[in-house]
Length: 266
Image 1 (cartoon, rainbow, N blue to C red):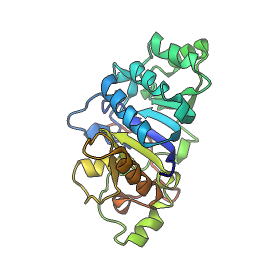
Image 2 (cartoon, rainbow, N blue to C red; image 1 turned 60 degrees about the horizontal axis):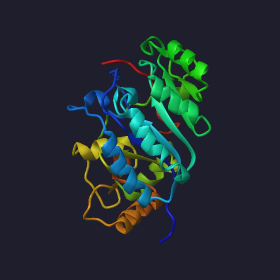
Image 3 (cartoon, rainbow, N blue to C red; image 1 turned 90 degrees about the vertical axis):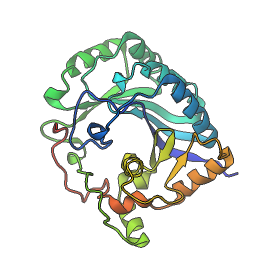
């Protein structure tokens, strides 16, 4: 079978967060029963994922706020086991509200050539940002800060994805719209609840029954009734498609969409 190499995957490690951002791209404040991914669950899903794919460019971990997950360091160690199949680096996105513990920082420091932190700066909301930067600088951790506060906002600000009404009723219109989206065009996929989805918006809409579901909209990694070969075929279908069902209901992550102030709290 043809090799399956994808650009980027994001593993959602928790649906809990220290903030309640109204426009959270993962809809975390609206999750009724938030939970953490355990280290064992992560090990199980990673095993299948890296059987399905031959390689991934960037392996990203996010939430919610990943540092709220007590197993986060153990999960990272599981990801590192697959370093040979990760072409670029392992990243983790945090919001500057929690100071990471010594073991977590040590893991990033030891593997700074291919592991880095991405810290979102929400101004006063990122209350521990200065302390975190001081710690990371001291330990020699590779990190960058993304500005979501004040002037020169990264990406020009946030997008409101909360309208789930049908916007692109034909397949042609859906495909054309999707190819303007950064996530769709870049094939930046997401793993949530043991499934590979096009993006977090698609996962949320499917999970909550907001849209119809078609073959190729997601890959059920943990479904043991489907072989690895079949899962590879499903992922290749999704990778080669110009859009999935969710794209018809989404404004898209593209330059034409109106931006708003990041991290406004509910």
